[in-house]
Each structure stands twice: as C-alpha cells, then as structure tokens.
Image 1 (cartoon, helix red, strand yellow):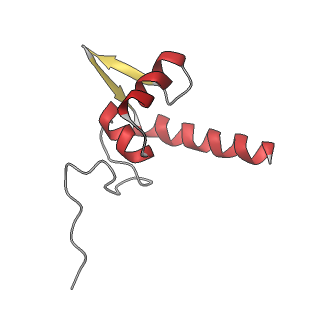
Image 2: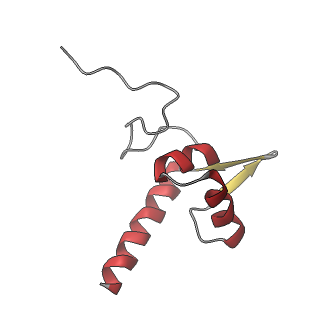
Image 3: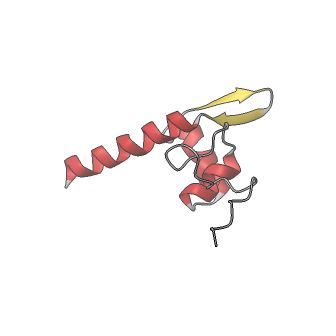
Amino acid sequence: MSAPAPARDDPRAILRGGLPDRYLTTDDLAVIFKVPKETVYQWRKKRIGPPGFRIGKYIRYDPADVRAYVTQRKDADRDVA
C-alpha cells in the first residue's frame, strides 16, 4: 500500500524542498513555522521575517525566499554557537 497523497490545501505538502509549489499566504507561514498568525504579521511589520510582497490587498511569500530565510537563520544560529 502506498502512502496517501498530501491534501492540496496542506501548506506543508512536500513538493520543492518541503515547501509548496505556489506562493504562500500568511496562514501558510503560521502553519509551517507553528506560530500564531499575528507573529507572522509582526515579522513583516518589523522586517525580521521572510520577505513578502503585496498582490492587491493580499500578502504573499515566495517559497524560495522562505527557504533562503530559513537557511540564513540556521547559519546565524551556527555562528553564535
């Protein structure tokens, strides 16, 4: 028996490097990083999280930018340790 395919609505579906093959929403980032949605909004306001961009009134995140942000954070934590 094969494993069930991930749900299309699941932002954690593994397509490219563990990230969906589409632009991510604020809700997606909250689920992926397991933080409240308000935290993602604060990251954007303080310019400390992954870079996002506006499409009309909506904020979207490029999965490649999110991956680069995670890599940068990992490298920064390694340098401190």
